[in-house]
Structures are given as structure tokens and as C-alpha cells.
Length: 349
Image (tube, rainbow, N blue to C red; front, side, top):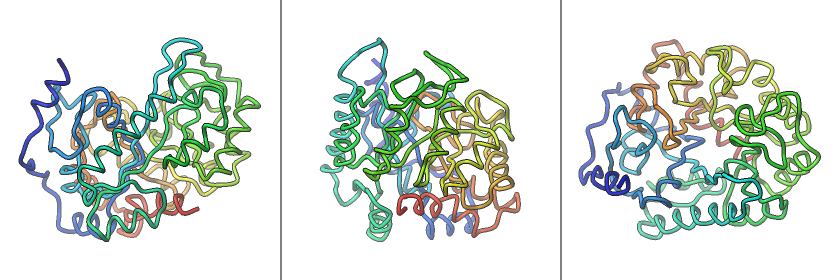
């Protein structure tokens, strides 16, 4: 069974981190990185994946999962992780999607209870900073797809009370809010539904950040037009670096930036358009060139059935990405923003 295979690849010692410069490691020490999207709790709920143990990914080329755990986060200077809460609407009208989300939140709670000094639930920018001061990893929560609300706007408040800080409007299937960029129910010309507009307003009232990953372009621009608080794109590539249905164009970048939001660059080589650290730098540099240093962030999509680009199979590679950015002429100030400060600003807004 895959669950046994995953457990067999947990190691009791910390693996050797990738080589990185003292300058890069100092930047991560001063600005512990925030990653906007990893699906690790899906594996914890399904397979008992242990966040507190070091793992080596069980499958060839680190595909699909086994990417994130606390020991490797510490080695890579990753101080805070947004854990995405995934539910899969495999049949029209299926119920129980909200329950699946609650079960993943419960799984995180169990992990926190086991070692509360090592891992904490964070809701605010102040919480994230407090975790950094105390040597704990900050765990934040986001829901991937408004289908998890099961058509009930009141669920936004229910999940907000449990610590959810962002809600992705779409995933890979249409729901009450609108249509995906790709997947079941794709309708490129149709934007947000009236319920979708109401959902944006309800999220903002509840202090839940609107995540525009996976939504079609029309719905994306609709959401930005009515937003009064900064939205995010938690995990994406950009068309200006590589043209792909999954990636967003310059008008979408500007729409997010105009509202003070951030865009997390994904680490999946299929959407980056190449392998290695250079394609990630290319996407980040394009965001910098188009909308400036206040918009780029990290959005790995680790543990989300991805094929990670070489060098970023897990958090240990983040200081090497920082070195690649330094070598590309990106300033320390800008790197500090894209590692941490931009995401913190949106959390505090």
C-alpha cells in the first residue's frame, strides 16, 4: 500500500541540505519564508503522513507527494506554510465536502497537539512573527475550491472560526461561484455568478482572503474588480514566462497588484515551462518587471500531485532558489519581500 510505502520512507535523521551560500541562508534566517500552498494535509488525512518526521519522497523524481515536513522546512528556512484543504467533488451534488475539510483541519490539530512548541496554528501576521521568534513553524489554512462550502455562504464564517485564512473560488470543476480555467464545467466567457460575487463580499467581511488560483480569466477579473481587500493567487505560473492554460497573463497580474495582492509562483515544471531553478527565477522576474516588488511570493503546490522542478523537490531547496535570484541580480530587499514580507502584508490587511 502507498501508505506503508510513505511510512517506510520516513527517516529518523535529518537529510543533508542542499548547498547554499551563507548570504542566502542569512536571508532565510532574517526573513523565514512563507509558502502559500501545499496539499500535505490531504496525505495526512488519507495516509497518516507524519509532519514531524523527515521523509524522502517515495516515488521517482519526487512526483506527487512526500515533499513537506517540519525537519525539511527548518533546513530550508521555511518558517510558515499555508496548508491547502482539498476536497474532490467527484459527482454532481455530492455532499460531505465540508466534512472532508474539517477532517484535514482536525489532522493538523492532532499534529500540533503532539508537539505544540514545534508547530502552531497561525491566523494573523502577528501570529506568524511570534512563531518565528519562538522557533516554531507557523501553520496557516486555506481551502481549495468553493465547492467545499456546499452552496452555503454561512460556511465561510464556520471555516473562518476554525482558522481558515483564504478560500480559492475554483479548483478543477465548476461550482456555484463560477468556472475553472480548466476542467469540468469550463466556460471561458462566463465570469462570476451572482453567488460568486456574494461569496467575495462574504469572504472579505469574514477576514478570509480570496484566492484566484484555478479560476477562469473572466471570473478572475470579475473578482478583482469588486475586491476591496487584497486577493492572492496562491500557486500559479505567468504567461509572460511560459504560455499555459494554468498560468495568468499580465492583465491579471496588474489586476491583483492594483488591489495590493500577491502572486505565488508554483514549482511544478509543467507550468514553469522547464526544469531547474532558472524557470522559477524567470517567472518571478517577470512578475517583478510587470508589477514590481510588492507582488511576487512563493506558492510551491508541494504535495499537490505535482512534478517539482529540479532543486525544489522539497523545502531544503529554497536557499538555493534565493542564491539563483541573487545571481540574477535581484536585490536582498526584493528577495525578503517575495520570501516573506509580501505575504505578511496581505495577512495583516
